[in-house]
Structure formats: C-alpha cells, structure tokens
Amino acid sequence: MTDTCENCGRSLIGGELTLPWEDGDNAYAYVTCPHCGHENTQYGYGEDD
Image (cartoon, rainbow, N blue to C red):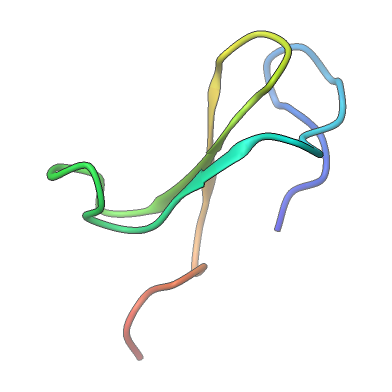
C-alpha cells in the first residue's frame, strides 16, 4: 500500500480506504488523502486472485 499521496506528497495515515467495487465503479482499491482528497489507487489491494 502506498504511504504518501501521489498528489500532495503528504501521509495517507487517517485516509479512508475504499475496496474494489465498493463505491460501484472502482476496479481498484483507493485511499482518499485526508489532506487534499485525492483518490490514491492501490493496485492489487483487495482484489480477487
């Protein structure tokens, strides 16, 4: 899992994790940055093997 936001470079600690397909149309998990709101894709996280 990525530790820093790809948009603002700050820590993703405290960010909200959304699993694949949890919001209906996201094929990959993502963490929403608690600082800037950017959705940081987490490739391979929570996906079926």
